[in-house]
Amino acid sequence: MEPEARFTAIGAILLLLLAAAAAATVWLTRGGPRSEYRYYTIYFERQSLHGLQLGGDVEMRGVQVGRVERFSIARDNIKRVQVTIRVNARTPVGTNTVAVVSRKILTSVARIDLVTTGDPGPELAQAPAGERYPVIAEGQSEFEQIADVVNRVAVTGTSVLESVDELLSEENRAALVETLASVRSMADSVRKTAAAAEK
Image (cartoon, rainbow, N blue to C red; front, side, top):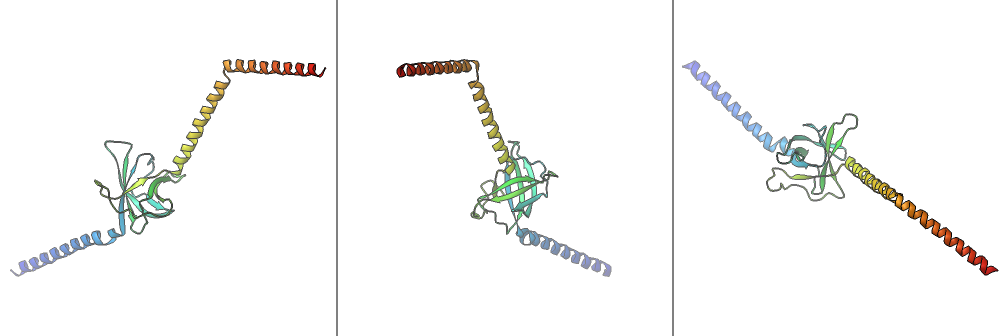
């Protein structure tokens, strides 16, 4: 009987230790280090996420403030990628903060930059209906802005070339030659009239 009582006591102590470890784990995940972070969702539709990895950096003004937790492509719209990020709770993420994708030139490893234009707006803390976390809007990267400018210049250049081509069409060239001939003829007439008036 004595060995059985000893084993029972050891088993009870082990169970108590396991229960205490489980309680400590729950406490730490709810009130401990996890509370130092906030989670946000970003939906990327216009920007390529090439080079973005799980655990990738999230930066604000060049300072690492978090990391990428997960991402998934929407079933109903394959151009829409849902990205969940974890950010230090002291990071000033406001309602006017947007997310853009940046890449390191040599490695092509992507990161997410949180950009706030102007003064920080009210804190982004409310999750929209149907969302688990607050949603940061997708911004426009510098690369996209440059691409847009180049595209606009290309469209304008094409339109100018078309206009010049239209101006130099055979009919327009003939009309221009005819107009120049008329102007020359009129100038000759004016000169002759002026010469006759002097006599």
